[in-house]
Image (tube, rainbow, N blue to C red; front, side, top):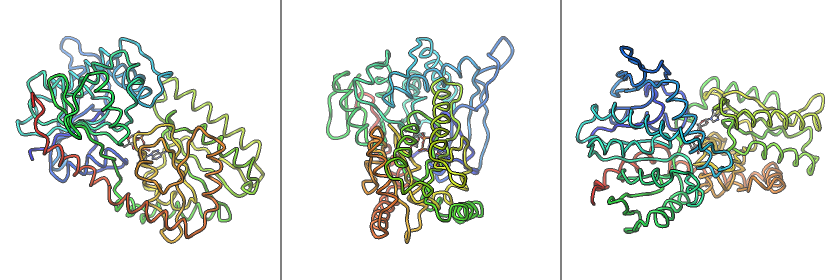
Length: 466
Ligand code: ADQ
């Protein structure tokens, strides 16, 4: 296979990967093979005017065997492409929240313009046998822009967030254009079988695509292969992180402070897709209906600040502060509070220790592409005395992690009941569920995900006319 060129909105130095998820997965893939990583520089500059470089300035930097190529954006482009269309239209609709979408027609033009800018900057850097792997909803039309400029390379796309059913997608005024853009790829990857099924139904009902065998669809004079590749974590890396000083210190500190108490844990970005108000209400119901948990169970909820300039996020923050205050006011004692709500990011090096110190993880999104916290929690547990995962059936991870306690997060009573079951689960049952979950998380880890995706992309015939 030729050189790997990964493209994502944000780019990181693969020699120094601090964050989880996508950055680690792509960084590892690139380090293994060498290659190029292309995306936004993270810099917002003055708009270009005669003589000043402005948006579109390209920075090339060598990081070991990986070339980092990044482009600056001006304020107007960044706001409309990133906050406006990507996070104000695609993110809510793809998470089934049409009510939160802002279909301002100006956003699409700039979303398209930024994708064209990326294509113009990327195309001259490409070699004929490069394999291009484009990531996530910010960059859906990038391949079609590259094709329009004559790039015939093999191109794959991976969607990290869910794909909703056809009639929800169809609420986006430009849905045909968006979905047609996916046919410029040779391979389109989704997180779950459910997302793949939605794609298959959409293209057949809205684009009259012909299914051509198990994974192939033909429409717009092109054939695309579409398949589910559930993303995983690096289990060994996370276990090794658990041995570092900060992780051990966090474990000891939590166990010391809460020695006689059982901890419930939530770790999320502060996002309306993560079901945080419903989760807090379930903990309130737990305290009301199962009073033996008062003075005994505590929820540690860490919600990392995210997209704070978008209104829906600011509203959510206020709602969570109100709810956690109300629950603590109602049930708290001088020496115990039911909820510890922390609006901050936790250092990644502390996460394994924190997970290991907690008896139950509450991973209860209303919708989630995958949710890596569910997998990290399982990987961090002591196999002899493991904690229990309470997992939303609406997270992509639920397709794989059947031995978790699966819940409908909209059903507050049922979620409270599942938390109660998790808190009182006998050791033998916890061990047997944990073992099965860990086996699956190991078998389909992040290395498997990357190898499998690139193997299938390598086998896929170029789609033009094919
Ligand atoms: P996210 O919505 O960001 O990602 P998720 O998979 O839960 O969601 O988390 C990604 C990483 O961020 C994890 O490694 C997690 O530990 C870390 N993280 C989350 N909250 C944190 C906090 N408060 N403090 C510290 N670290 C935190 C998108 C999709 C997901 C999909 C991923 C990867 O929305 O569904 O699983 O991409 O494809």
